[in-house]
Amino acid sequence: MGERIKKLKKIRIHREGTEELLYTFFFVIAVGVILWRSFDTTIPFSIFIAVFGSLWLMMLNFYRCPIRYFNGDTEKVVVAPADGKIVVIEEAQENAYFHDKRLMISIFMSPLNVHANWFPVDGKVKYVKHFNGNYHKAWLPKASEENEHADTLIETPDGQEVLVRQIAGAVARRIVTYAKDLEDCYIDEHLGFIKLGSRVDVFLPIGSKAEVSMGQATTGDQTVIARLP
Image 1 (tube, rainbow, N blue to C red):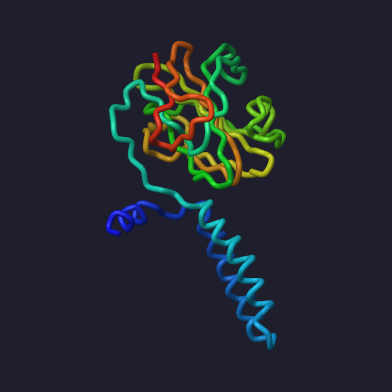
Image 2 (cartoon, rainbow, N blue to C red; image 1 turned 90 degrees about the horizontal axis):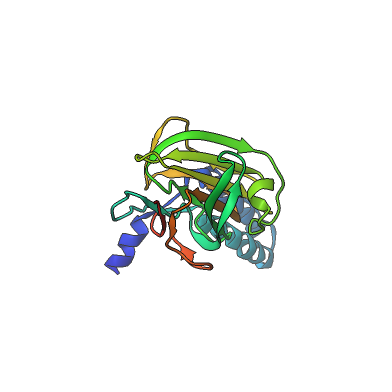
């Protein structure tokens, strides 16, 4: 029981969802009171609470934000920037910034995953840019370049460059990026947030060694996905 309480204390609600959860909570309560007082039967009230109460709990689950700390040496380590599943591990041409081949590791986030994003490496932010685009399904290869996305370029303490790409999916319509140009960044800090199903790509220098496999589940800020050369 004590262990369970300790885990609950390490979970909070992400600031991106505070207002939405508060407003929708009061909406459900207000309409519920109206239905309770307006009908002789409790059926309309019960149906409304069952449907909208469940939707509110799903929103609460979506906006949860666990407090995590990476335990281990961070030198040359690349941690997962998001909860989800590995859908791509391959050498790919990156044309927005590097214009050469990079090791690309992609994580698909379902609506049930935590949607906070973490910095995958320690370093300094060199470049942050948002790109408008389409809303293809996030797991499709073309989503990386054609979908709306936000790029954050990080230079590690030993001079290697890592590009993190937050990608909007078919449902996700809002990408939030907290990274700022020329700011220091660290593993354990939040890079941003993507609402609903989406994807995060990480582009690493050739010679980096992948530490994950296709289909593997990842935990943001915890799972080591690669080691830099």
